[in-house]
Length: 109
Image (tube, one colour):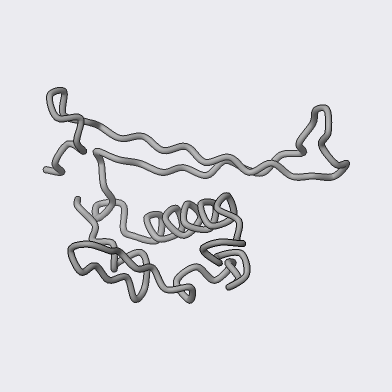
């Protein structure tokens, strides 16, 4: 099932040149984090992925895409050199079925 962006990101718009996802559509993201020059692209990305996951999983199973999926792993304690004690690591997994010639997302049935 193909899902329109506005079904996941409230207030999403596109004018053919730009896309806009309102800050309110990403409730965990602050204006400072989203700032175009001083913000944090990794936090913007994480919030988009988190909203994508929660939006897709909120759909009825029969309304979810089958040619592209998003999964969110359970957080785990991060380990390794330079990792602060108690830091959690959150993983996401995305899969996309692509057409072999154009490498575009395969159409939903």
